Image (cartoon, rainbow, N blue to C red; front, side):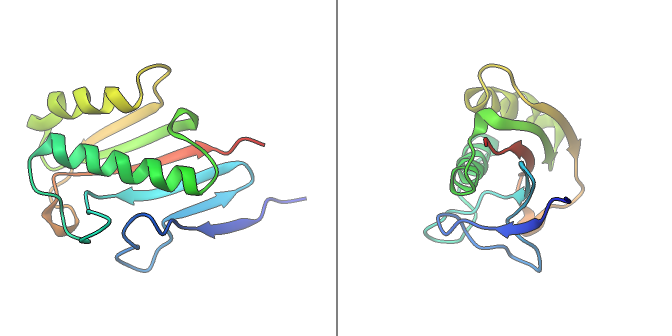
Length: 130
């Protein structure tokens, strides 16, 4: 029997800003679209630099994971898009707070331009416990 694709979302984070799903479940895997630092209340980019934007992205990702039946500890892989690799060290210090042990596999790339000219975007793949 093949796994069924199911599109999921969270009402606790800003809605998708294009024709895509916030997350897609297939079997016990959850594929989360890239999260950007939008405040759930104002739907605007949070003020501040890379630390503030990283916290908002990872808070939004955590809410999405929870609402889809999993948690940050079940994240297998993240892909991080930074506007500037000059922010790499500051980003890493915040990221380590969210993944203090057994961190997921990760790729980090510099992107020429991100949506709404944000400093960071993060996507994730996680398992959903049975």
